[in-house]
Amino acid sequence: MKKSISQQILRLINELYNAISHPYALVITVLIIIVWFIVGVPMNYNDLWYKSLHTFELLVTLVLVFIIEVTQKAEMRALQEKLDEIIKKHPKTSNRKVGIEKKYKGKR
Picture 1: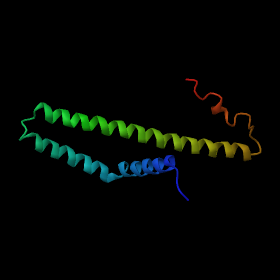
Picture 2: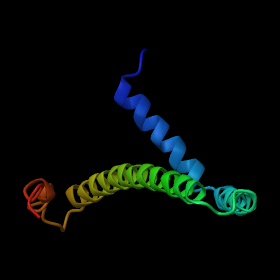
Picture 3: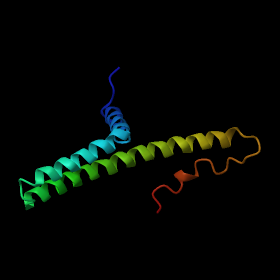
Picture 4: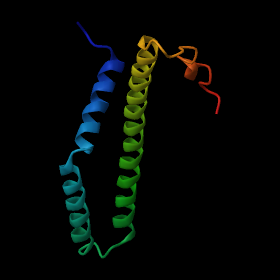
């Protein structure tokens, strides 16, 4: 069975999220910063040196924001469905509010 493009993208985002949340990601980040400082010495810390880091930093930050946003949205959706299911099954609860988040979706 062939996966759709959106399923492949979500799988890739989940894999990236798992990679960036691994403890080794911090070690790699520190190593990149150390190498960046070492490379700065022969370049005399010129504008190109600063601009290259800032461009890289901007791109990484942008990608990470989207990755975190997508994973948090998926986790919240799953949590909401679980809570709705608990409310529906519990005999003493009222299910009047189940799905109420759909009513307010888009209103902020």
